[in-house]
Amino acid sequence: SQELEQSPQSLIVQEGKNLTINCTSSKTLYGLYWYKQKYGEGLIFLMMLQKGGEEKSHEKITAKLDEKKQQSSLHITASQPSHAGIYLCGADLSGNTPLVFGKGTRLSVIA
Amino acid sequence: DAGITQSPRHKVTETGTPVTLRCHQTENHRYMYWYRQDPGHGLRLIHYSYGVKDTDKGEVSDGYSVSRSKTEDFLLTLESATSSQTSVYFCAISERGGRTGELFFGEGSRLTVL
Image 1 (cartoon, rainbow over the protein chains, first blue to last red):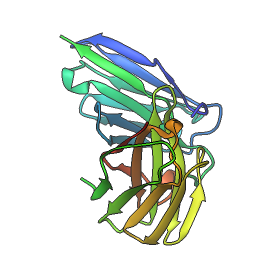
Image 2 (cartoon, one colour):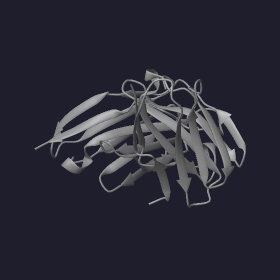
Image 3 (cartoon, each protein chain N blue to C red):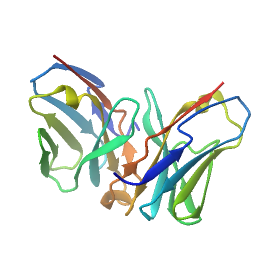
């Protein structure tokens, strides 16, 4: 959905490097969800953020939601080949409606 | 892993033929969704259901119909398939709707319309 803009569209990083993926909307993000998709497979839930300023971490992945609740970032520390895939952000833009998704960020991690 | 099964996983069909994709869940979740994923467009909502026989349209519902006669099954039908409906279709379920409910996705059904 164009209501959610993800950047960059694709990213190639060297193993061990840090990276950040952004998800931006002109509307309030009532609930922001990060998913990971391995090539040819379904989407795996990573994290959910709801409150402005909220930050969550799981292993080497940290997600943040800004205070205005219009932008989220996903940060990966010391990237590994297992981090490769497509990262998608999804959000409820109206308060209680099905999630709309960004177009995804394709991440490649090279040795 | 959430118990979601999509069938068929792969299908090739010809323009003008009807196609039905099935999504089956064993989680007893209330909400079920059909999305399609296309290069350059990401994931877009086709239809969703918030209960048995309760469905609503999504962003790209034209050319698609759905039915939900049981909690566990959500069917997506293409009455007369067109090449523009070549896509990967994902079913998702959630216990709660909207901002309070994370989605669990199936493995996807790849449809090719020749």
